[in-house]
Image 1 (tube, rainbow, N blue to C red):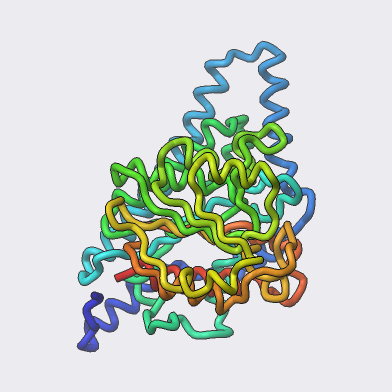
Image 2: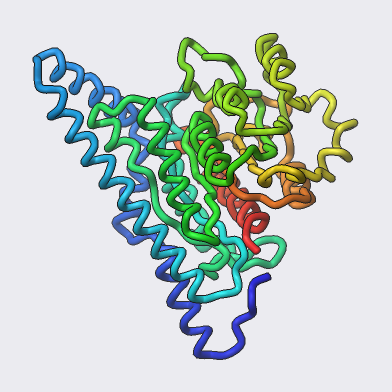
Length: 378
């Protein structure tokens, strides 16, 4: 458990440390965040890919292009590495933390089959966490201002990497490498801000590989996201859990909140032994789902929360609106009552471009992050 801060000197250190760890938004960053909903911005990465393809067609030496891409990738990973190292050193210096949640943004939206707005979610979620409309305490009483509870290592620069012509095979490896860099700084544990649901595959892969074995996954979603290769894209946000199960990165996969599932989704579920809990039976499944015990005999528990697991009355700012979902308190009951060592988590598929009710869904996503932080940190 976290040690209490008893004297004024330590309190000052903790306060200063929290400011360093959390890096609140400046006014200019808030302005930039407010501009992120420009609807055509997601196309820039695709234009970058096309630009590099033209260079290849023009017989520009491939070594020149590859060397440049490698420099950008190295710089991107160096930034994540050094920020994680700083935050890890800070948490260890303060002492008392066995596990500490650390935010890592993955602003990726191009693998979405409908809208690409989730690429703009990480800064909006951060802004909602620290906007001041509520306090920084979780329902269990943990203080997010304490850097031993929550820190932030920044974002994987997905757009900049894609703008250099890096394909998805390499991009997924970069995301995995970024997650591993966070995990190298014990006691930091990654709490990843998406982004569409395609990011869960490289994140879970990294967690499993770093810990040396499979995890149990609790997946809250309106959709099973287990197509073999939706619309021909093996990295589609609708195929992430097929990749996870194929790779052997999960022992158990529990999918909760499902209410939009095709025959392929059910067949794939049976193929991989997935435990699918649909909303049409939620009333009878509730007691079991609100008393889950996971992670025994494996490397821990991974939680993936797709914001559209919630009924759109609670979270309208999503790309795929599916009525008949979970209430927010349903979700919190499942998360808060879960027994198990949560080693990492993600919150995905919040789409700021559809969050038309005064940032309501951003606040919902921020609350999910707060409560996941409470499950991870100890």
